[in-house]
Length: 388
Image (cartoon, rainbow, N blue to C red; front, side):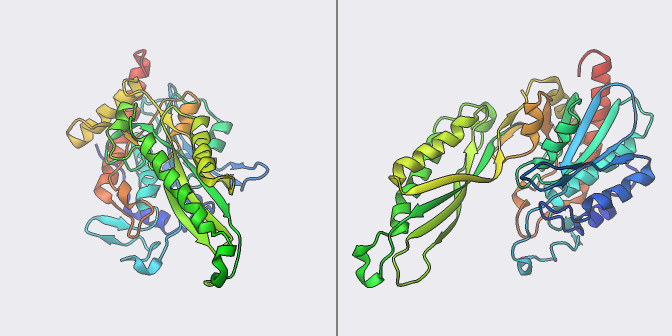
């Protein structure tokens, strides 16, 4: 299967757009510039809602008859961290040993470009129904881009998201909830510390309670795809800030972290964290939910679209891929909530996402593009035969 061009040049142009969430950073304009000469109809609607930043998405499509199939990806990226630690500057799109470096290379601008090249290879008149590529923003901070896309148009029969899965076919994803807690103490001079109450001391039982809660969540994992993971439902406190002066008893501590949502679980996930914190905090902790709030999502592994995606990956990599679950949040759950079958399948390198020296193998992007072409043709054929 031949693709029209090598994706490296287009990916480099996209990486050089510093689209740190929620900023669009010129990424959608770069995509539009790539798409229009290939004959795509391009739309860039803006979603506005009180209390949230405006988010702009890009739709690329060619008209066709038959089923409506979506390939979706995000162009926003997380901050680069310490840029001096990178082997190559984080927005340079440098190539070394067949890999392209840059923030967003694997998560997930590379796969967006792969999907672009796949749709170009399909052409405008092939019997694959209506195939649409949507590139969304604000995935990294909660999924507002995909929420907006589905508010605008949810008339799709299936969706493939080529997130970096190592060519596993992901049918289940855990959710993730961002939280912030404030622990109150009583200030005093260090020389008279017994007159005060350290917010750090009050926080320690809370930290232990959150660790115990994580252990309980992972003691008996029910979902078979999640059970295969070393840690299916991780809970992390990633940031602490306490005190203002080294010789004062700290009267305030702020902790921020991420709590998991088990597959199939909803409000109970938040309530369980609140209960653990309340019991350990003894009335001295205020907890609130901030930042990204990702529900879980699932498409049964025996669903026809999951089986089709598995067959397409197998034809490309020469072996049967795994059906898998992942412990990280993704936009997959928004499609599943709408009743649209959705799976994730993409290149290797999830361990490089959000990391220093993020990069993606260019040959794997070509494999992803060819897989997408197979999914598109197979979906149309299955639908015309009464499946799909």
